[in-house]
Amino acid sequence: MVLKEQVASFFEVTLRTVENYLEHNAEELARNGYEVVTGNRLKTLKLSIQGLDHRETDFAIISKTARLGAFDFRAFLNLAMQGF
Image 1 (cartoon, rainbow, N blue to C red):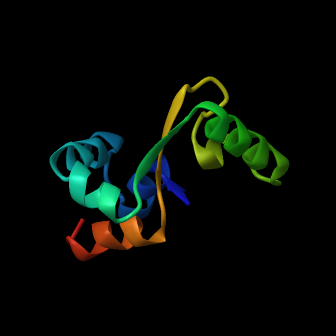
Image 2: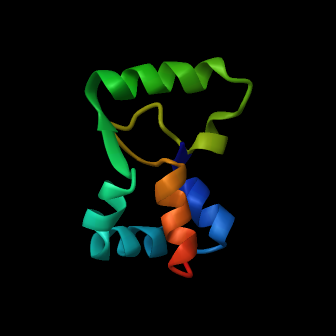
């Protein structure tokens, strides 16, 4: 799983660039594994990330967020193949 902030860092683009791409290609990315995690799934994800030996900033500032956009490997590859 890769968060939007990690995608922006990997491709050396701004977070706004990633968000623009999501707006224009939401349907395709959703089919390929991008999803917005909320509710109990988000709570479980936050607990899992906190259990890792990483600073929270490695996974964005997620402690107070109510929604979190996440790319699985296939959606991440989709970005790469589009010349992102």
